Structures are given as structure tokens and as C-alpha cells.
Length: 225
Ligand SMILES: Cc1cc2nc3c(=O)[nH]c(=O)nc-3n(C[C@H](O)[C@H](O)[C@H](O)COP(=O)(O)OP(=O)(O)OC[C@H]3O[C@@H](n4cnc5c(N)ncnc54)[C@H](O)[C@@H]3O)c2cc1C
Image (cartoon, helix red, strand yellow):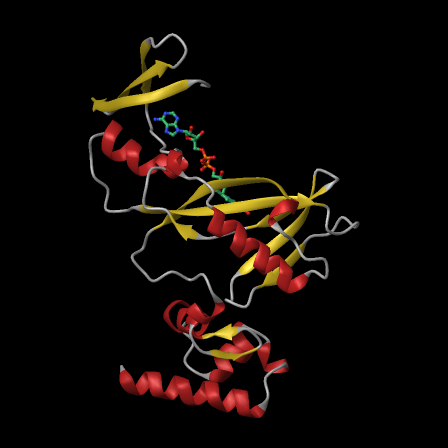
């Protein structure tokens, strides 16, 4: 239902009594539903706490992403992904024929979703990032538009993984400590042989030295358990 706000809900004999408000004429209406799905995106926590009046053990955290649009930097219709010097991933995408879209920043946003707004430091960051890669430098005068949004990410309380270095040791060929740990915990991997041949085919690419480093690390982990 468009232009309709979910206001509240309570369960009666296993059926949800749902109050919604028409945001044009402000009229309230009660609907019945067997199941409620909270699809409120960045407002998920608000719906749970303010509209359902309950608490959830699960939370989301909001991460702000800002973008800049500049005059076309390249003529073809392919996008670029860059790994910046601070180890983040960013992109430059052909945009509305005459422009290039560059994004994105990745800032924690511990405020309401509506308050997400682009700030000048973010354009500095994005310009510097693009200037690491493109021959034609971008300046503030080239920015024709900018916008921000927030992403709701599941908050598992773990540290953030924004950079490749957040994934721990790089054993080679993008096999990270985080991935190896996941294979041990969820796919019963115990040896380098398991990881490099049974779970991945990275054995094709690993040198003897890299194989040995991974095997030694696994032995150490088993010793520390
Ligand atoms: C900067 C940025 C970049 C992104 N990049 C990507 C990407 O590259 N790939 C990707 O897959 N995803 C990306 N996303 C995420 C993508 O936007 C979301 O995954 C997607 O929009 C989520 O859809 P959704 O329906 O869950 O939530 P939303 O699209 O946010 O919809 C939630 C809706 O709930 C409504 N709502 C809230 N409260 C109420 C209420 N009380 N009553 C009624 N309605 C309510 C809101 O008005 C909204 O319309 C990006 C997001 C941002 C901000």
C-alpha cells in the first residue's frame, strides 16, 4: 500500500491486528494479517521499538554511503572498480550518458536514516580516490551533483570488514584468514590439503612456500585450542 504508514500491531488469537495510516488524509485503518514482515530497511529498529513497542535481540547498524557525479570521465560504457590506498573498494560508473558516478564512502551513521546528508570531507575523499586512478584530475568544480543514503547492515557486534586487511592474514591469491577460519568452523577443514584442494582449487596457484605457511598456521591454531 503506497503512502501508507504502519502505525502499530498487536496479536489477537494468533491474528495480527494492524493499524495503518493514510499519509494524505491521516485516516487510520485496521487490517488483519497472519504474518508480519518487517521490510522497513533502515527503519527496521524503529518499527520494532516504536511501532511494535518491543525489543529484538537482533539489531542493524546504519552505514552512510555518499556519491559524487562529475562530467563524463571516459567514453566507454564499462564501470571501474578501484582498490584505494586505504584498502577500500570504490567504483566509477557511466551515469546518464554525459556523467560519471563515483562512490562510495562508508561511514557509520549512528543517527536517524532521514538525517543522512553529504558532507564536504566525503567529496574530498572521493575526489582524492578518483585522482589516484584517472589521468584527468577531478576538482570540486567538476562535481555536478552528490547524494547520500544509508545501508542497514546486520549488527553482529563483530568488528567491521571494510578493508581487505580486516580479513586477517592473506595466505596468497586472496585466501584470507577469515575465509580459512570459516572453512574450519563450517566446512570441517583441518589441513592445507583440505583448503587448497577439497574446498577450493587454489592448490593450482599456491607455491610450496605459501602451502607451508598455511599448513604451519593451521597446526598453530590446533595447538592453541
Ligand atoms: C548508498 C547505498 C548504496 C547501496 N548499494 C547497493 C548495492 O550496490 N547493491 C545492493 O544490493 N544494495 C545496495 N544498497 C542497498 C539497497 O538500497 C538495499 O539493499 C535495498 O534498497 C533494500 O531494500 P528494502 O526494501 O529492504 O529497504 P528500502 O528500500 O530501504 O525500503 C524500506 C521502506 O520501508 C518504508 N518504511 C519505513 N518505515 C515505515 C513505516 N512505519 N510504515 C510504512 N513504511 C515504512 C520506507 O519508506 C521505505 O520505502 C545500497 C544502499 C545505499 C544507501
